[in-house]
Length: 214
Image 1 (cartoon, rainbow, N blue to C red):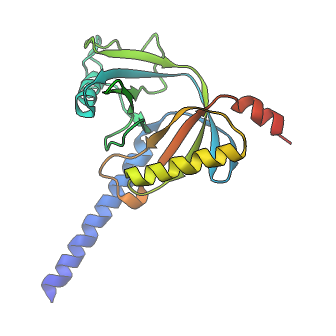
Image 2: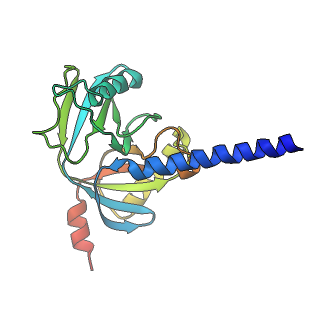
Image 3: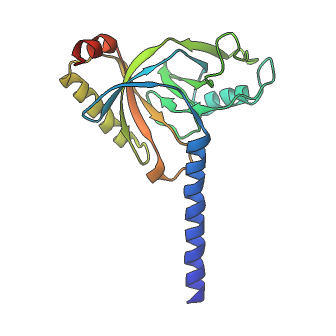
């Protein structure tokens, strides 16, 4: 009986550590800044400022991730460690990695990017020493997102993408490109504490919001 109680206490302790780790990572990871503009039907219209990312194209996500992780770990001209930010952005397939990552298919290969902390500008970002890693500047953009929790399985992501596009269609918003999966937590965060979003860029959102504002 005592062994059962000790086992339960141990399991409870491990669960507490697991939850604590998830909360710690969520609080201490810098997020890509954004400004909420409008909310409706479980959708948020959001504005992102200009951002800088390190990007590479590789045959698979493991190779791409390795290149970029080496870049933020000092494989740059200043040998400088660069902090990772959230969210992870994935286009075309789901992955479980730490933030920030952006991946999209490119002729059978994978294009992946880490967003750099806000303190970096195109002029101050460390230059990669690996010629297959490049710095890319994202201009300001407006997107629509739909949030969901738990693990981002392919089935769940497809369902949320469909709901996002359907609800934008009802409001006659004009999506630009395919939806992207955003993941805000590292792989060890408990599933019930995870934050995921599906995101799609909008072509005419600023004009629409101004036109429909009361």
